[in-house]
Length: 365
Ligand SMILES: *[C@@H]1O[C@H](CO)[C@@H](O)[C@H](O)[C@H]1NC(C)=O
Ligand SMILES: *[C@@H]1O[C@H](CO)[C@@H](O)[C@H](O)[C@H]1NC(C)=O
Image 1 (tube, rainbow, N blue to C red):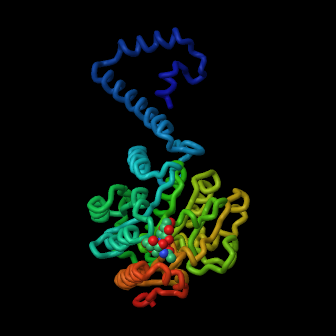
Image 2 (cartoon, rainbow, N blue to C red; image 1 turned 90 degrees about the horizontal axis):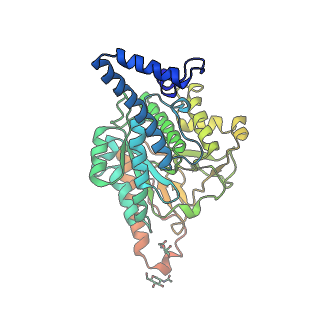
Image 3 (cartoon, rainbow, N blue to C red; image 1 turned 90 degrees about the vertical axis):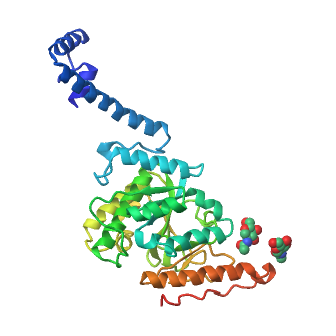
């Protein structure tokens, strides 16, 4: 940048001496009009602020492997420096000591009273030792109403700018708006990785009943829940992943992987992130970057497709395999009731309950 060269006293060949540079600056300054001086000062101040913002980001410990510079920032050009700062502030407040956050995305339809978001929060309250996890939950809102509702109920809300796309209504599965929303999510999660944060991403229609951390694999970069789990956590071929629940470490492998995943949408137009993941999970590039993937057992991370069969082990239940918001809400209410029934029985009897006690899917059939 020309301004940087002026500041460092170099011309294009980098050969100018400091003395002749100073003379030149003196000469230039003498020649400036008052207005010109103010303009120049403002311009230089901007450059200084710009650099300060990046050093601040590094000092705030935002990066565990490599700082993000605008030139390396391979996601949406719409993400401004100011937004990254705002995001980092929210993450910092919500983070666990080892830089891990829980993330979910929310739009107006799901944020409405007595809809999915209320049930989601309720599950943390009635789950076993899950209440404290709410301190680490960052809600990424996709529209203004969702943001306002989030702010009324929860301390950590971040409003994601979405340019001109309206994500507020109940987006039908695989409609163009739905697809854009899903890809925006992948792009955004890639940004979180590049900011140095590990995360659990959870859909809001997943009920949390137990702390999932003890159930994660210790040596994996990317862990993902399944619609259908076939018994082997490393079986890339037959497990059917569901992108609604992932646990991702922030490292070089996952940073490259999310960029690859996001980029692959161009190769498979019309497919959503989960379908594209099923396409690219075999790609030699994954092995090349050394990404380790594990699939999570539905015994712990269940859903309507394949409910957890054991109430004594279940951590989460997802309203997957379900079309229609009102059906989802209906069955999620049943699930919360089932959990409360389970808690209310005597704990010696509880140990004997190991067949599926869920009364779902009901409306979600
Ligand atoms: C809840 O968590 C505590 C502590 O981990 C455990 O002792 C207890 O058995 C749990 N209760 C249920 C219902 O899982
Ligand atoms: C049942 O729970 C009570 C209190 O919650 C506890 O004191 C008791 O040891 C538990 N019994 C069994 C068999 O876990």
